[in-house]
Length: 192
Image 1 (tube, helix red, strand yellow):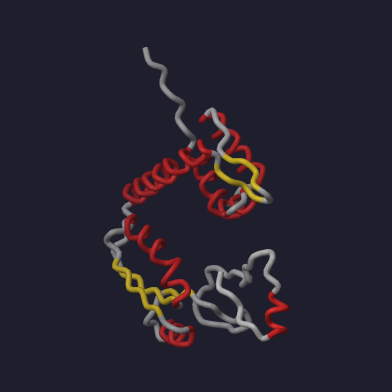
Image 2 (cartoon, rainbow, N blue to C red):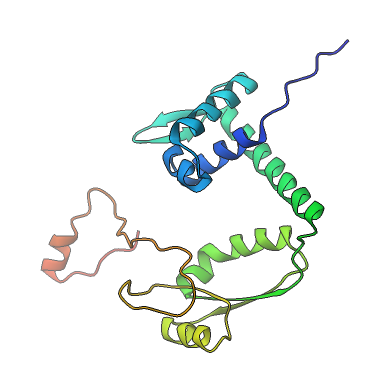
């Protein structure tokens, strides 16, 4: 008689995937509305169920081990199927239209992948994406021509609608680049 492999805990898989996507399990705990210790315990449980280490320390962060990469690819699909099944059971398949406005920065890099994945999960939703400048997007939002906007905005400026999230802008540069020296000499900043 063949031994049945252990059934993996979907909550532990969700904590694992969310932790790696967030870059830390502390951030995953916030997103999942759990304590950091609970998320860490779920990771340990998943590693025990898999019989392998899934993450390793890399500098200040974490990286997937070879086994972790395998688990990650399956975990995403398993969670997507779970979520799709839950929506189907609840009759929550979206069949509407969503109008999203975004700046070029987001429209050319970040959003195509996100919207593509959303479309896979909700094939009956019609997505209308508008790429434009801040002022035009905000005007369209205020005129109810857009349901959602993703843009750079002054934190002091109050708008209609509900703020879903906000991130601090950060300058990312190689550690050996001296921006102050370049600016003092009047040189343009290199694109990296």
